[in-house]
Image 1: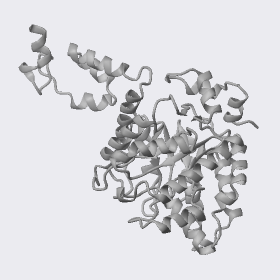
Image 2: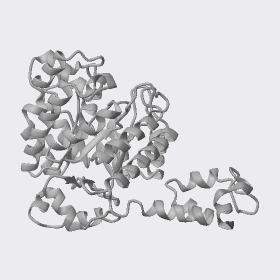
Image 3: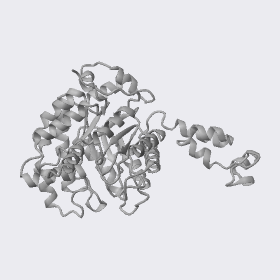
Image 4: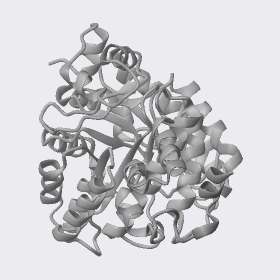
Length: 423
């Protein structure tokens, strides 16, 4: 069966492409061309039906992902339902199930059945958690078991999966050469590196990448090539290990596109402000313009409790430089499993960053809402300001208007807009 990429290369505009351009500054034919060129992806597993499709990539609005899921210390279906609702209320574009605790298959089914948006996951988490629960050492994993687990999860309907194929013997060697403060902060990356060191073998996802492509093509699953050696501190940013892995991912992305499999690249991480733009430009150059999916990035390491704000700063700069997809960071980052309030705050912060980036990119129509908001402010049209705001409910809750509705309580009778009208 054909994938969205196969159809795009054949010059066919699918219904999914037509649905995905609703609200976007391009036509379905233009999206088809970008997908065919590998510069956009449209994640949708052929076994997963859901109403809100999103395309990610060049010329499209910057998209936002919300990570949900359990941990071994905290697993509650009720809590995950609250978090999913919060993410959707904040208008996330996609979600990822990163569960590592409890009945993982049941949580995955819940997200696939209840989410109206794209659902992604990291398949190695499920296998690793399953083995740990059975008291099996992670180094006893083998390639057949890993690929079988990936296929099972893809068959259930995951629209995209993160796979750490760039953690290879070659990139591990670079990691050992560079003296990092924090060698590996990627959970998936660390699992693969541990397995490779124990077994003295190549990463199965790299060695058997063609088999992985067969699975992805069978279900039309988009591959998100994970950055196992992303910097976990600004001290380690843009070093040899990170760049070696990125070059490998660029090579694998080309192989994926040639097989008709949609692919995007994951990126850092913790990056100083002045290195963010160069990181984006490097990825776009080395990966032939493949969509770039970044965590943050965080331009400082000391904003614990406010990491969603730090990530919004980094995300806006990254998006303006060409990043296509922002993975949210919540106020709970580095501190614990986020709750529903954290999820909502994280999505909204990332949406602010994405919108700022879209304006900087010059996307057609990106400033239209800003203009309408400003017109409402000039008219002192409070209802209009509420409707144009990114978060109308918050504005409605925080708005304090004077009794005559001629100003807010910040300025009152000294409202500059009101005074300037009388001049």
